[in-house]
Image (cartoon, rainbow, N blue to C red; front, side):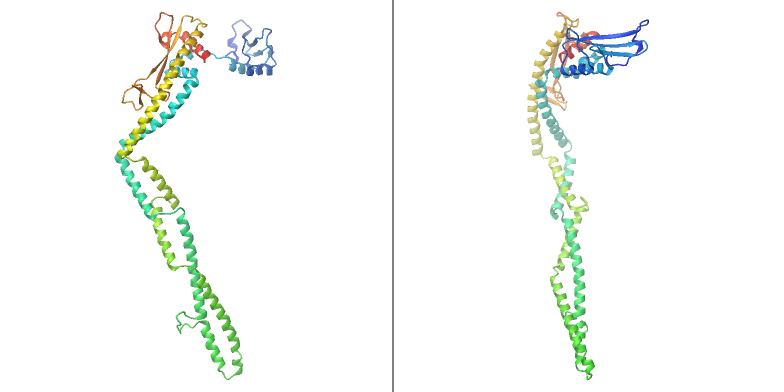
Length: 426
C-alpha cells in the first residue's frame, strides 16, 4: 500500500510534518527491475542495494524516490508489482478452501502433475459423454424409439423419390424452356398454316399459297392482257411464300421439344414438392434434413447391441481414466512431501521454527450412487474435474503436537505466515 495506494494525510502522526516508508532491496536486479531503475535515472547504493522511498506530508502531498532520484509514484507502483507480495490475515481465507490447497500443490508440482492431469481430463470428458449417452438411451428408450420411427419414415419417403442436389431448380429451368418452346411452336405452326394451308389439305383452309394459285389461274385465263400481265407478279409472290413456308417447316423441325417431356417434368416436380412441403423449402434442404436424420438415428439406436457397445466403451474409458487418475495421485504424493519440506523450511524464518507442515493426498471415497464414481486400485472414488484426490495442509505446531488441518491448528497470524511461506516456495 505504501508503494501503490493513494497518499493520505491521515497516515501522518499527529504533531509530525511527514510520514515516510523506506525500503532497501538486495539481490533482486532481474532485467525488468534494472530497466525500471535505469529509465527513472536512479542508481544503486555503494553496497549494490537499491533504496526506494515514499513520503506523505501533513498537507497530503506525496513524494516518491528511487535510487536517489525523485520519480512519479507510478514508477514505485510498477516496481512494487514486480518485487512485493503483500500478505495479511485475510489471505488465510484462501487456505480454508480444499480446492485452493489442491491448487497450491499442483502449482508447486508443475508439469509432473499438469501433464497426467491433462490426459486425465481429456479421457474424463469422453467418459462422461459416453456415460451420459448410455443413461439417456436407457431411460428414454421408448421416446427415442418413437422418434426413430418418424425419422425412418421420412428417410424412406425421401429415398423413394430419390432427389438429386439442385434438381428442383434444374427442373424449373427446363419447364421454363419447354413452355417457351411450345409457344414458339404454336406461332410457327399457325404461320405455316396461314402460308401453306392446313396440314391435312382441308380445302376450306387453303392458305395464302392456295389463294395466290387460284388468283394466277383466274388471271391467266382472262381475255384482257392487262389482267394477264399481273400474273407474273403473283408468281413472284408465290415463290416468296413457298420460301417462307419451307423456312417455317425447317424451323418447326428444328424445335427439339418433346410434347411428352413437359408432362414428365411437371410430374417430377409434383413428387419433389411432396418433400419440400414437409422437410425443407428446397431439395438441398431436404437432403440436409436427411443427412441430419441419419446422424440422429445413429445416436438413437436403443437396441441391445448398441447399448452393449456403449457400455463396453464406457468400461474401456473408465479403465483408461483410472490409470491417469492413479498417475495424478502418485505425482501429487511425491510433490506433497517436497512442498511440505520447503514450506516448513520457510516457516523457520517466520518465527515458527518448531512448526512442521504436512501435505496429505487422499482419494475422495464415494459410493455407486455417484454418477461420477470411478474404481481406482479397487477403491470407488469420485472422479472430479481435478482428479480423484483431496489435498489438505496439516500443521504440527511443535514436534510433539499432532498434525491437524492448518486452519484448525494455527492462529490468524500463523495462517498468514503459512500463506506467505507458500507464496515464497511457489
